[in-house]
Length: 496
Image (cartoon, rainbow, N blue to C red):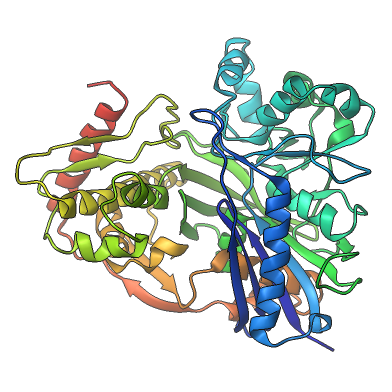
């Protein structure tokens, strides 16, 4: 019997496919990018067919790179950008509008109205989320309000809503399965976090009819089989689904309460395993579902910095300081410090623990002696400070220090950033051999769901630590940097 797993990692800027064996070895890999659309300031959209075609192409390329025939794939695992929202015709599979991406801020006024109506505390308690344009619920409401005829068709059951996992499963199964896993459902602002079911009151507040919602399923179970997919035979089971950050938590083998991971991608996302307990944050973190295996549910606390790798992209594309993102480390190493230059990368507002959509990116401390190298270093420090804020909030919520953080994502390859992270957070940073832990987590879930492993612990052999970054900065120096960062945050929020 074949024991190869196809992992699909559908991200914000592109889709990655990995062919892996049960030892964790990557046999074939491909990434296919697709266009981003910015129709208005603060608006971000994707063409759903661009997402689908990028997945199909990445899968074909990964199989080709591995020299493997598609019929050797035993199971498919999916992980995805989470809050991005799609609405499509059930019969034709055609979208009624572009996908509204998680970064999109178009529903800020709607969120303000929801808060003004007094729903904020109910939403926080029911869903574990804050009222913010980040999440899917207000994006669905916007589509139903602004797409001609959408609400009537939705109430009649002709339209289907889904986050990207749901859309991909629908396409992979030829429209046979309309599902989403609990981790993705927990990001919609429509699921009761404790009951793991759609909440009718939330549907009423947001004006979202139940008829368009997918069924909520576990993270490691068979949900359907391929049907009519270019390059794949019919009948391959889809057995693993998790949102990208939860998949990374699983892929980093954060199976015990208190285990923490940070993924450095477009944004930076920190999650801590809280076990079977829903922890209600006092410090602006989100309560969310990690995964559900059989009857066992694992919850997590999450904090998100909206801009991390995107700040480096801005230096590249906006300021033209570097030609590729990988150049930033060498540029930043040209100076021993940022020499007082501070950069708060609030280019899309601030997420946890501040939740300030009006905050703006702030650079200060410039002098005639400031150079591109100082700004590059300040950018990396800004990302590390953001993550340190999130780790501190988690420690405060749990009432115990965090001893280490496991890291992944493209920017985790930056040794300088990882050392800054260890020093500014005051904790050990552990980096795995392969940074695509998100896809690895999807593969591990699929392997468990397909019965190739009996437990997460058996699947843990698919992930290994490569390098550890220990704290070298003196505590008094760290305290100085953190005080300067707090001042910079106040400036970015206009509260100085």
